[in-house]
Length: 247
Image (tube, rainbow, N blue to C red; front, side, top):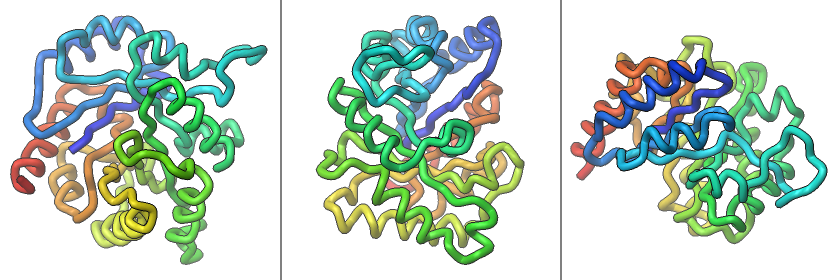
C-alpha cells in the first residue's frame, strides 16, 4: 500500500516541521509513505525525515531540463534536493495552469530521465461523470499522459475524481471499484499490471478501511487529511491493516 501526502500550497513552515516530525515518529508495516511538500520546503522536510520510513517528492516539474522558465523547477533540481518521485497531472495543475495530457507526458519523460519515479493523476469532472463519460475521459488521460515504454517500477497512478477533491464528497464504493478496474485493464494491456493505483478524493480515517477494501485500490493520495498528523496516521494504519489482510 502506498500512502502519499500532498500538502499542496500548505502549511506554514513551522507547522510543516511539526507535521514531518510526527510523520517521522511512526512507521507502518506494508505501507510506503511519500510526502509531496511545497517546493521551498523540500530540503527541510527531507532533513526532518532523514532516517524515517518516508520518502519525499516534488509536486510538479518542468518538461525541460533547464532554461529561461522563471518560477519553474527542473526535475533534476528536485532530485538534487532529495526527491525520489514527482507528482504530475494533478487536476489542479490541469485546471489552474491549463496542462494537457501531452505536457504531462513530457514532464514524465523529463522526470524519468533524471531518475525520478512518477505518480500521474487522472480523473473526471462531475459533468463528465453525469454525462456517462467518466471511464472514457480517464482512459483518454491515460493514453495521453503515460509515456510509451515506461517501466512499471517507475510509475504510480492516482485516480482522483475532480468533484471529490477537497469537497468532503467521496465516490461510492461501486464507482471506485469500476474505475480502478478500468484503469487496471488499461494497465494490463500495456504490460503494466503491477503498477499501483491510488485513490484520492477526501480520504479520511473514517472511510479509509472501506476504500482500501475495494479491489485494485493500492493506496491513497491524501490532501487535506495529510495536514493533520493524527488523520494521516489513521489512514496509514488502515493501509497497514489492508496490507496485512492481503498478504
